[in-house]
Image (cartoon, rainbow, N blue to C red; front, side, top):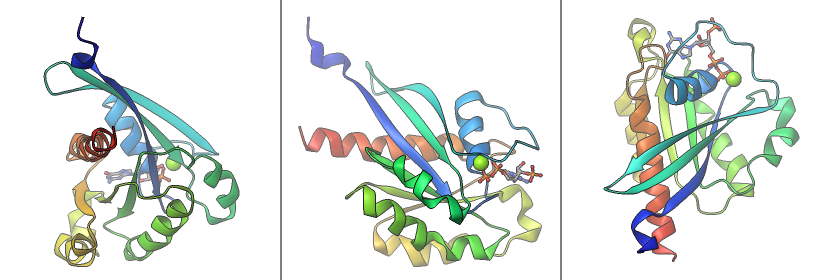
Length: 179
Ligand code: G3D
Ligand code: MG
């Protein structure tokens, strides 16, 4: 039997970003394909997982660690960063402040996780009439630094699979480079 034909990776992905940007909603939409308009705020860290196929006969399990955004819980949050393979930094396109905090999130995670891929995600595109950050601005700022920039609506389910597909791709590419 050729064991290498069905390698199963388990990858740990962190969902980070300010309070209320939609981290929990994205994790639930991705793993359970549903959206509820009110969740209890995340108390510590929850995790969600989903098995996806990549290529012909290789499967990966994506484990999404959904962290709490409040700044006072930093020490709790940081413990869960250990061992992450990739991170998604979410901002709310209707709240510029959450966009301005992206670097802070990258710095906090980078302290614990060296050299992992980050994806920047502008969530809540269904609220376009309240938009405060256009996609071009996000791209102008982050693409040249080597980050992928995507937008999503956890509410409508738009762009959500693409986020995790992209991070899984970036992570597995890195893993196979290092074998
Ligand atoms: P968090 O985990 O980052 O703190 P949540 O964020 O997932 O708890 O979402 C915060 C609020 O934003 C929730 O509303 C949630 O329903 C809403 N939300 C999340 N994603 C979207 C989206 O794509 N579009 C819209 N319109 N709303 C979204 P409440 O009312 O519970 O505060
Ligand atoms: Mg939450």
